[in-house]
Structures are given as C-alpha cells and as structure tokens.
Image (tube, rainbow, N blue to C red; front, side, top):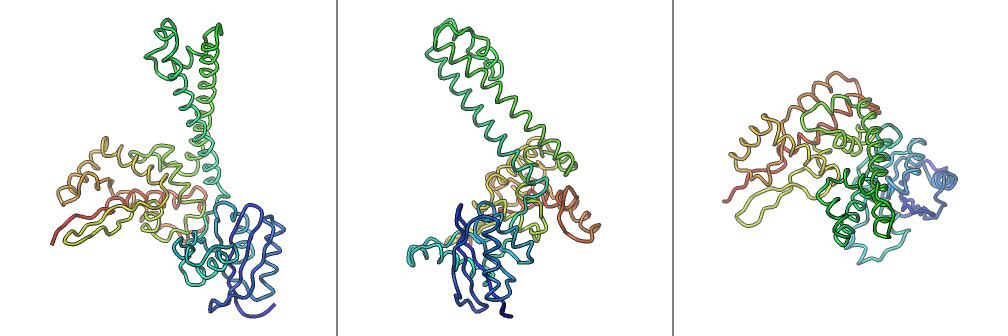
Length: 367
C-alpha cells in the first residue's frame, strides 16, 4: 500500500456500487464496480487501500443504498461525507455515467463541498423511523378506506344511506362492519368497514410503540407546549441517532427548512423561509408553532411583537426561545457530544428546530 492519502467516491445502487479514487489534487486514479453487499464493500475498501491510505470518502445515498457501505467505512476509520445528487446543469453538459458520478462524489468530498455527516439509524431513533413509516402507511390506507366507504354510500339505497350518513369515521366503520351481506354493495361496505377498524387498531398500536420510545429517550420534549408525540418523533428522526453531526442550531434549522433566504429584488429588501430541507420536519415545526400560536400566551405575545416590527402573519411562524436557553444550560453540563441515546443532547438538538423559526423571516423594508 502506498503512503499517499487518497479520496474515495462511490455512486451507490441497489445491486452494484461504482467507486472512483482521486488523489489529493483531484486527479482520477482508477474506477471499478463492486457488488452492493457486505463482501463487495469490503473488497472495495481493500481495492482502494492498494492505491493509498483512505482517510475520506464521499458516498451518495447514505440513507438508502449506501447506508451499509457508510457504516462499514466508518467502522474502518474512514471519514464519510454524504454527497448530494450531481448538479443537473453540469450533467446535461457533460453527460451522465456511474463512474463520472463516483468521480464527482470523490471531488466533492475533497473540496469540502460535501460536508454533511451521514445520519446514524442504529439506535432508538432508527426504531422510531421504522415505526413512523409503518404508521404513516396504515393511516394513509385508513383514509383511503374511509373515502371508499363514503363514495359507495352515494349510490347506495336510501334506507342504508339514511342509517349511515352523517356518522363519524369510526362509528361509520363499525356500522358498516355489522351489515348483513345481502348484496354486493353491502358486502363491500362490510369489508371496507372491517378493514378500517383493523387499520385503525394497527395505527393506534404503532403510535403506542412510538410513545413508549419517546417517553424513554426524550421525556421532557413532549412536555413542552405544542409538542406532541408524532411531532417529537419526526424531529428526533431528522436529528438522527448521532445529533453531534449538527454543529449548531443554524445547521439543524437548515436541515428543517427553517433558515432565512434572501428574496430581495430592486428596491425591496426582504427574506423568506427556505423551501428546502426535510419537509416532514418542517411540517412538524409548523404544527408546533400553530398549536402554540393558538394555545400558548407567551407565543402569542411574541408573535404580536414580531408583527409590530414588520413581519407578516405569513412569515411569522416563530415560537418562544425558551428551548434554546434550556439547551444552553444542558450543553454546559456535558463534557462531550458523542452518540446520544436518549440524553438531554437529543432533546436540545430537537428544541433547536423550533427556536430558529423565530428569526427565519426578517422584516421587510424598501430603500
């Protein structure tokens, strides 16, 4: 093995990973393909080490096809950086191929353009993510079932429609589930009603599991005004099991799409909220802010002060900064930011998300 340091770039896929190696000045040394399996990933690392010491790697798709590879490289002492999809305009000009994408990934890691640390999903937050995926699917299917029941009732005979119309979803499903299958329509309604009840029971059981994990890893979080179990779970999922990868509150705000973006033109100088980031986390922030704007007097007073300073109600989705103050006190009491498995660090990182919203939209002015 050579003593020189090299940078590895990987374009990940379901079956094949394509790797490229560049030196410290960005010159391409070699490219190759490997199976997307643990054995293939180990062969890739051994192949790369024949050209030099691998200290840094840029990997695409660290949250999907590249997750196993990123974990293996980190275990081997390689610093891994998450690489976003290549620039579309450049790809149209230069063409697209897997070796070219791997080379771009390596150069992005070398230049520092790719600076994000991959999210860890090995702890309780990874379990939350799986449970939230399952619950989201159950709720979506339940909603579809409810819509199908109501669509069938439109063309149902008047006697059945009169008994069932106007009922809430749960009561409607129970009544449909008790219908006698005397014709095709009633058989369908009975089947859909029982399906709705099964999906509702499944969603409730999954939410109970989510609540149990939240209460064990971040019990103080759901005590904050406006923070429900599902919102807390989504924010913890966005932070990941290694929240130390988020350097400060601004980094987490950017991850949640809550950072200010310049939107000035001509004589108008203004800022708006970012439309990027994790939109699920952004939706959780909106729900927290909305509930607090309705129910929390301190938040309403704060919003009124911001509006008097020039913000509009559309921009003003902020909430109180009490979370940041609490987070600062927790940070002074900790010696390091290692893997947070239910610690105050995880709560602090989560609270950062909705504190940044207070300053996300600046006042409008004209000159």
